[in-house]
Length: 478
Ligand SMILES: [Zn+2]
Image (cartoon, rainbow, N blue to C red):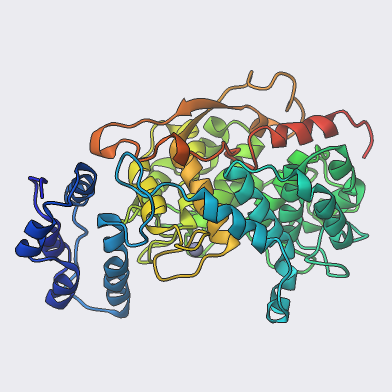
């Protein structure tokens, strides 16, 4: 092997103290010599990458957590060092983005489900959203799904506002978020006008709580997902910021949907620096994105994020989520790398960097994890090697890849007059080019591996949120 900084076998010995694991995973020197004839510059580039990653600190105390972490690394390293799936490689020696198998996987996931999936009925809006967003990230048109999407969500809409998981189900903010985003993705006035805005306004008013947060459903749990889903809906539908007259929070002196909200989000920041579902809970990657997303809807991130969060502490916590040498993210302290956090944590950086300058985000390593370890052999993307693909991990791995590949900038002149009213800040983003990087930490994808632009706050195709907002800004009445 050409790599002068150490062969993968010696690197593995350093990484993994268990000799059995080293035996299993490492080739002997002789075996490496045999490979000399087939080794390429590309393969040695992968070895150079592994050699360049800072060693994880190994605690000598063995626990269930340390054991599963070791097992995870054991499962992932062959994918970082080689190409066990036999995918075609790009010019960096990394598997190409396998569009040809991911696209059919997502089309299939939009089809019929067997009776065993009945328990997931309430998740139908999510499955639709993940598939539609995933397909558009891969460059596919979803126009052919428009009529079905409108028809499906018409039956999920509750007469008193909001969307449920299916016909006759109670409204819920998670289902509402997925429904609204799906309708925004397929677009057109027909899709937008299928939403009962005045009932939605009333429903959201019922969710607002006296302490500033939002519940997910009537009488349901109050958490940061509720706040994010509510603000996404308020902003995209251009609903009034004033609470409806019958909103229960008015009895506690609140008059606006954003009253006490920034302070409530601030209380969700934990002693670790990350953001939790609700005050006193544990910090979590997905809730960090919800919190930053909320603040980025309330105003320019530079103002809102700095006003309500301890930013250096959050930067530290987010940077600790990136696993080495895996390159992908985990969602919490002492947890395992998982492809979906490519988005939940990876996409935090665009929002946070706007507030506080360059973050600590290794885009190259994240792209390497997604392309090398998170593509399933038969299509779809996964949590980690050994797991099955699903629409959720496919959507959010691709969104994370997009977050690694592009740079964004907040610019109040970005979209002309769109976003002049309440909660208009998320319409001021513009693309600041593709990220290039440098050397071993440079980009690891070719042009064919680049996914489509995704809105950094709404996680829909670029331009779709603006179309929707523009439509509703033109409406005088609810
Ligand atoms: Zn996951």
